[in-house]
Length: 484
Image 1 (cartoon, rainbow, N blue to C red):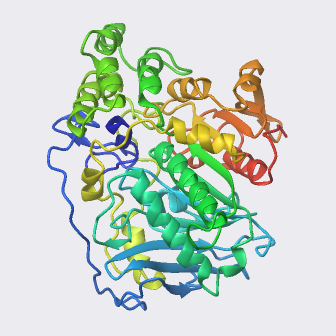
Image 2: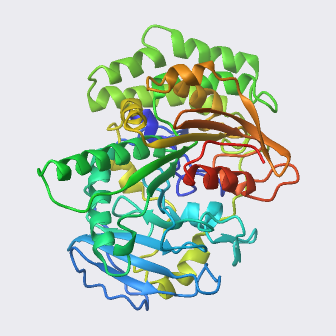
């Protein structure tokens, strides 16, 4: 439902460099009142790329020297032109090891409307932004250590992408990403990856994006196999979802639980918690409104649910703590802002518009369109796609109480086995870093000391992103999670 689309909106709306949910009319994650379809335009800025689109093809800058400075590692950035008025921005990094055989990973941040440059520069890319936001340093725990990775700004209009803003649902976004991948894998520079294992990794609103994209890829593959359509089959094998809101009906009570009792301290008083409990359970309250949305409710019904639930539950329960990392007061200045740095290097990497962390118009276009993505997630798991759901235990905005409740409610081929498992301690280089379960091709992990952007944090004696890198490496190797 529309509740889901609040995740990963940032300081475009709200103070705090790590803030990712809009404050609208004084309420964290409220509903915009005037959805609209607009467009973004190419802006001349000294980039080498032409502003003339080439529908069905890529426009690329190779080896710009920005971010990935490992000798011999290929990178490319630019646009995949879906049409003459829709251009998707991407930044590709070759694997630092065995790129010809390494898997191909697609990364999507959430929003809807948030740029995937967040994941690149703040989380797990080949470089990470410095704390003063002025430069970058090489990331030894980059996810391209053993995988080719593409960071994609989508839908059109997000980040460095530009053009007509036609997308307002996860399903429409999935269709555009399928088209982008057909263009990308048809290009002579990237066609060699057609047979490599493909993975989708995402976070936050990715709790909707990930299942929808994966389900669409599988559906299109089946249509190709049946001769109903033509195209390149995408060799999808992995889905990873971090701190994702997938099923609001199941996950929203997690805000009440986490605010009152989490691994660190209560976020608000018992009085505030009790008010939120009443708002959840009373007739016509949050739970009832979400159910109405799920049961074929109109966009206005779903918008009412989001507005009420976020006014009465999500926003007040955050208290005075940073909703993305509760160990700091609001607002937290970490992860560092990347806006000025990205715009300073835009010309060198071929970007043609001014970068913003989120696009408000895209956010508006998604208003009241997202409901429950758990059925898509169940279908993907049952199709034999190795799937991992992960969460940071210091994240309130999509907290582990809600995520674990969603996982416990999955109905898949591995559900019975999952429920028989007890949580085990996940160690990295001998240090406890979280707790996890494996069941067949499904894994779940709660990572200690991590906020909403899990790879941006460190815990104990581990380095920033070290625990997340071990998780990623194991899943991408088609292995269950295991301690080291």
